[in-house]
Length: 130
Image (cartoon, rainbow, N blue to C red; front, side, top):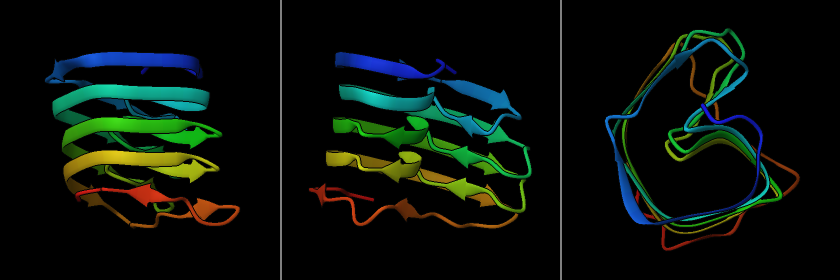
């Protein structure tokens, strides 16, 4: 995964096909963590994301997102998390003060335990299709 992304990532509606990420870290996806970042106009299809860490945050786009914006992103794939405290989201595992708009998520999830949560209040989601 791309580590600790801060900045602007405009995918210009390009596709990432067949993304495979298999690691046992705390946070995993295309990006492990988004912080003060903007990600937009991106399609990820046929992703296979796997994490066996007991306490992990997993999503196809990112394991976690803090103070970020995600818009016009489509993700499709499979997530496997073996941890007993796995936090899994099709798009992002854990969101904190992050805005999500106009996303489409199609995901198959296999986990030992499934828990997803938002830290510090609600996250506005506009036009999401899951």
